[in-house]
Amino acid sequence: MRKATIFYNDIKAGQLIETDDGDYVFQYNTNYIKNYPKQFITFSMPVRKEGYTENRLFPFFEGLIPEGWLLNIATKNWKLNPNDRMGLLLACCQNCIGAVSVQPIIANDEA
Image 1 (cartoon, one colour):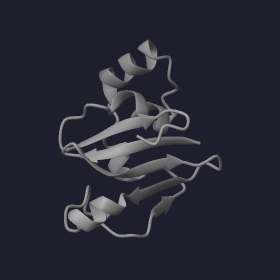
Image 2: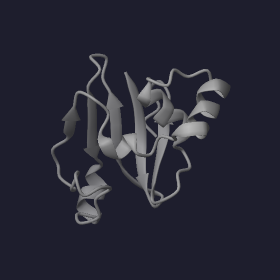
Image 3: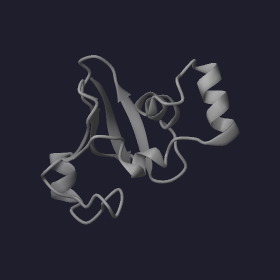
């Protein structure tokens, strides 16, 4: 299982999890729901208590992953499989252009 904390403008918005079964779960943080109920990270995922679950990486997070020559550089330098979308998200999207950033959670660290 791999996890990441999702930040929106330096505010902890939620957590993205890739389960051992290959599903993806995004859950907004309780404090974020309380303090920013109308500040969603994407139109397709409005702020709510219930988590979002998909059998593939959510399109919004897919869109954060580099493409083309930048993807080639990332996969070659970090020896990542271009099909490992969660791995690419964790490695390449810590300092994205825009409001959202992805910070990997290592082991039992609950950042």
